[in-house]
Length: 187
Ligand code: AMP
Image 1 (cartoon, protein in one colour):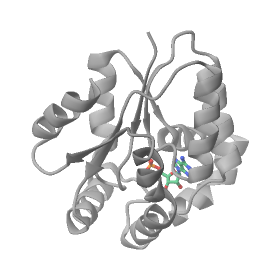
Image 2 (cartoon, rainbow, N blue to C red):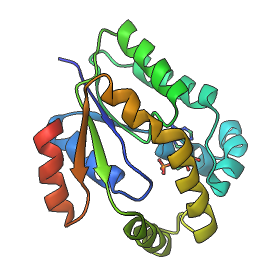
Image 3 (cartoon, protein in one colour):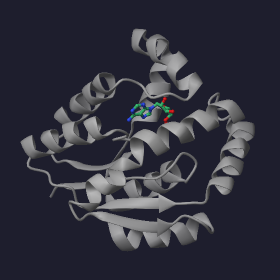
């Protein structure tokens, strides 16, 4: 049976870590547009070369590019059981996703929203930059990623709230504690 979880939350909130675990336990495919784009960059594809400066600056890749990636990914699935992590990030992406899901007769199951105060987000991102060497985890880029989040992605909270799906989750505490809260609304 289809299941569609859309994981909202600012950069550094822990979406990736939590989504991976939920995907394993609930048998979902984790779809992270950020990971897909970084993979293109690592492989040096034409798309990777095109988007690298955008990721390095903390801006958003064009809606057309990410929507095409998602459309292709979903078209290869027999049974749509997914957790989106980092997509959609704009209202245009959310509208495109609604249309795709309608075509696939796979309604949205839940929209968890991971909430973490901004000073904690900054220190988590800087720490990840030190540990994993992600090139966009530096102070300048982080500032722009928050700006993009506030301007373009935060409106999605209202977008989904009017459709009655959003579940705020406290993202503070150990990964274990946060996962227990996530499971309660999305497993
Ligand atoms: P993330 O791994 O989700 O933090 O994404 C890393 C970067 O990839 C973002 O700062 C954007 O530049 C780009 N990106 C990832 N997902 C999207 C998306 N849905 N729309 C536009 N840009 C995205």
